[in-house]
Amino acid sequence: MASKIDLDVRTVTSWADVEMMRRIRNSGAERYSTHREHITHADQVQWWTREAGGLQAYLFSPSDTMGDVAFGLLRYHDGVYWTTVGVLPEAGGRGIGSSALDYLVMSVAPVMCRAIVLLSNVASIKIHRLVADGGYWVHIADHVDRAMFRTALSVVAQQRRSRWLDAAGRPSGMGGAE
Image 1 (tube, helix red, strand yellow):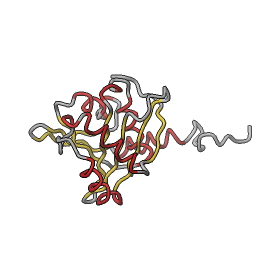
Image 2: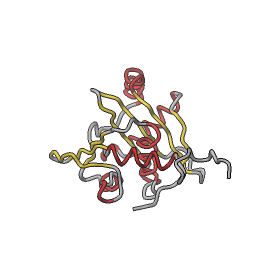
Image 3: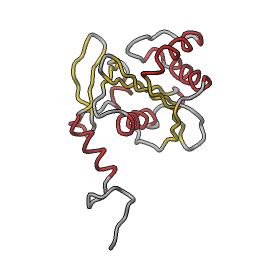
């Protein structure tokens, strides 16, 4: 598995951003667990208009100036936060999907999220690493051709804490008197 990389992240704020999400998503439509058909521009506009209030969406670009190559989406539905990540095929295998998912789970989402992944989507299965493998996902169940995961609350909370606090338990970057 590719190591995680630093990405430039920006919030989806314009119709051009929404269209970029659609293009990235359509480039790998067959890898999604639901709605595997290509989405038209009109359908994307209708979806965004209807759902934008319950979404947090981001575009990601690596610092090597490839431009936007991935999106991350956090959707609140029926009391559950769901993650979705898409990466352009030509940018795959570089850790971009894993880094985008980490951003959603560690920086944006509440502690508990869920994801549904096609069992045939090997890359996505790999980035939903189980706690036993050093990740923060718990496998809930398989259903026909899909796997369902949820974040491990204690692991996510601990990883967030370790990112924000130094060895002495002070907020990172705050320093202190010697």
